[in-house]
Amino acid sequence: MDLTQKRCKPCKGEMERLDGEQVGLLLPDVPGWEARGERLKRSLRFTDFKAAMAFVNRMAEVAEAEQHHPDFTVHYNQVDVEVWTHVAKGLTENDFILAAKINQLTPAA
Picture 1 (cartoon, rainbow, N blue to C red):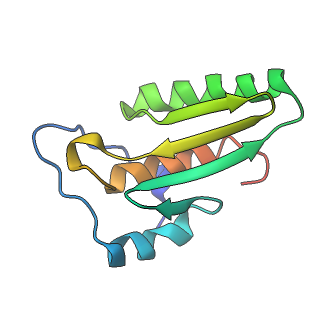
Picture 2: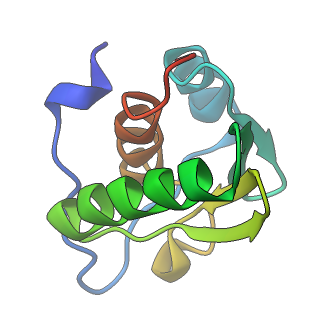
């Protein structure tokens, strides 16, 4: 399934979160990401701070276009990203769509 061809659904009211089996089926479609608890997480390394921030800015553009926003921290040349759906209190297909689109921004994806 090519998640990059999908769009995130607006979070209106309640959203059904994915169960463990569904998460396991979608995880191979987002290489580099891992499911920890109710979140998808990935750490990315760049050559320097400027490259890390350029990635963050590209990620922000994708997140705005999808209206689904990750949490992230920057540690000089490392960016740690977490994605989950707050209203679902866990993972939804939106999280996997965003993770797949973030993967498109990374050279090693």
